[in-house]
Length: 22
Image 1 (tube, rainbow, N blue to C red):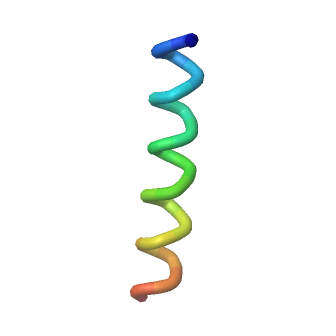
Image 2 (cartoon, one colour):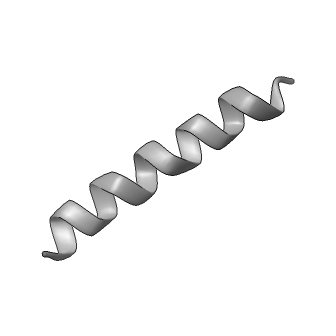
């Protein structure tokens, strides 16, 4: 399992959540 890839996925999800919230 790649930690860096996992981090990118988390950032992507966070970005989508923020856009949805705004």
